[in-house]
Length: 212
Image (cartoon, rainbow, N blue to C red; front, side):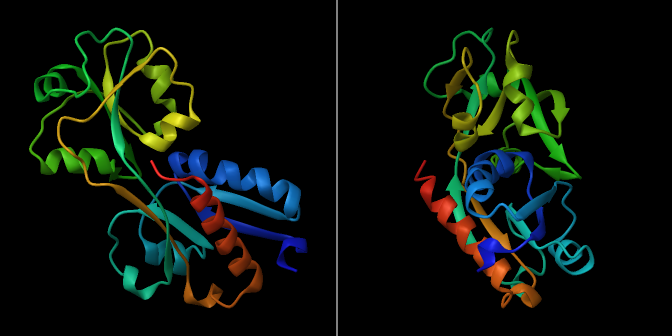
C-alpha cells in the first residue's frame, strides 16, 4: 500500500498551515507511514510556477490564484482572523474599535511579497493601521506581543496551536471574510496512488480539526 512506500513529497505551506495542519498530519505519518517524508516551501510565487516549474507535489494555500482552474484542487478547512493584543494594551473590550486599530502599533505580515489575507480585508474596508513591524512568520507573534502594546490579526486555529498565555484577544472592528484553505496539485499526480493517499490523509486530518 501507499503507506508502506518510501516517498518524499515537496509541499508549499506557510508557517500557519504547517502549525495547524501539517503538525497533526506528521503525528500520524511517523506512526502509520514512516517511509513518507515531507519538505515544505514557504515563499509563494504562483500555482503555475510551483506545480509545473518547481514540480512541487502540493500547494496548500488560501486565496484566489491566477490559473487555478488548470489544476485539480480540494477544500481543506476554513478559519477566521481575530485580534490579538499585547499585555500592555489597555481598554480592550470584546471588539477592537477602529480608533484602537489606527492608534495602536500594528504587526503586519508579508511573505515573498504576499500580504496577509487579514490586511487585504482591512484595506478593503478602508481601515488604516500604524504599522510598527512587518514580519514573515505568524508563529512569532505571541513572543513579539508580550510586554508591548502592539496588536495584530491572527488566525483563530493558530491561537489554539500556540502559547498565547497572558495575551488578549478581541473581535476585529469589522467582520472579515473567512480564510478558506485548499490544496492544489498538478494533473500528472492525480492518478499516483501515494499522492492520492497523502491527499486523502490531509483531508481527513483537516476534517478532524473541527469548526472554528
